[in-house]
Length: 434
Image (tube, rainbow, N blue to C red; front, side, top):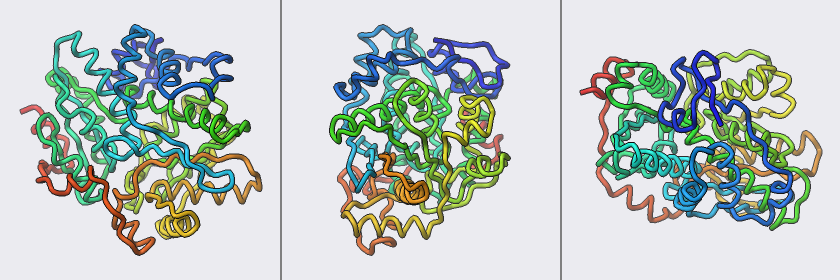
């Protein structure tokens, strides 16, 4: 399997090269030269498979340069927590992706990427520096996934004052090989600094740079696997045979891209809903045909506060840059903070389940689209984070403080360690290269 750049101005590379490069030399993202297809026999037997078996079958199609026994060990080491499908009501289900060590869906990709990088680095006997921009959960997942991994230094760039305190504590209290960088700007500024760094030949050479954002295939490809697992559980646990609609709370659009990849590989998914907050530039593209990046707006669902989503380029590539093709499979929906709070409250009153604000955006979108389409097709919402990570928002919605899991409670007691910088690339480069 080879991976090409979206722009097509750089040579195709192996997965290993794409993993270590992060992005292509021409400044664009790597994508598979051709999305592989799962065998019909495997797809028809999904309900009989374990998550690890599904992950191996899917990832081995991309990572054919890794011997099967080694890949199985990496998968078993990475995916050690449950990803249950929970029935919310009628034909609405939650795929709970937040049972990993940092209580967010990013744990799936971050843990796999940490283990696959460590596998290659042990063979190479060299060190690398990983950069990651975060609007919330990516930073903590990467920080914990890579903490104390030999031969790897990690710099996490996050927007000062624009993430929850718990999210900040999870990524700024580890120390060691994890360096928290507090940027006086937005997530888009953080992402720009990372992209500029990866395009800076001097810096890349000096520090052996790569990235752990979903622009890196090592983070993105593992996320395809849990959409197949959702379908397997629908078929096995809930005896659903109809193809589901998958609803993905979307910010940088890596998670939705992974879902689209899973469908292209043969996983039986009917279509998608891109659930967005007011940062809906992709929604505007699907509504109008014009993609116009803009400064991100701060919302309660802060991990989705992205004004120029990187993975949109991958989605365009899948759909051959045809707006109508994308619109035929992806339905956009955008909601306000007020609706986000209303959905947290409504779901709690109906079921006792407490949603985090990002999952709330997804559930509200699913309900509205179900009503609009007047269909009874099963809908699976990617439930991306534990509600306890957003105490202030949840309390505003339902009027009570929910108990903190121990992993969050312990992080609040630790000392914050971060370095504050401006949004100027020169300041960031000087910090990194010294």
